[in-house]
Image 1: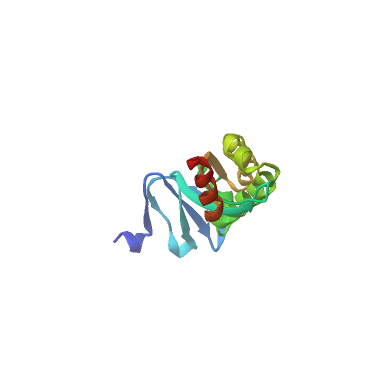
Image 2 (image 1 turned 90 degrees about the vertical axis):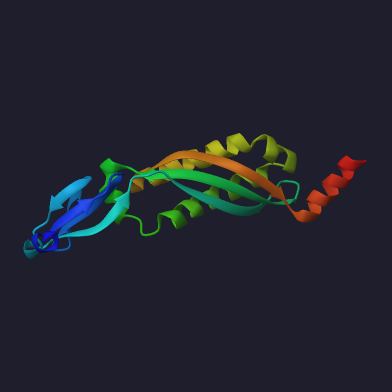
Length: 167
């Protein structure tokens, strides 16, 4: 009966995008909504407002020519008041965030030597977060937190460092 009447349910922590004859009409908040399908109303899709996490692995070279893999963890979410932007402006949010992270990491880590990259990982994380926040706010997303969870030197470098420390 609900489908005949055009009723839709929007779950908690989610919004639905309502279109009328293919044009954006409204953002539906959680609850039950009646959409007169015979008048062209439909739900184009749903958008989660929950915090999501994306782990990005980026290989780059330090100032002292050591290849490292930087693992960055980004927590982000769509903003309810910018749901239209978040739904329509980006087709693949995760790939866009990953591209920005690559750009910032590959611009900042090569300015540091290996030891400094470990010491200044909080500064690098803040730089990534700042750049992401600037870029993603135009698309209706908030960057909740950015962490550099690991900096992994090349296997041969790690082995050489362990041998030096063992002496």
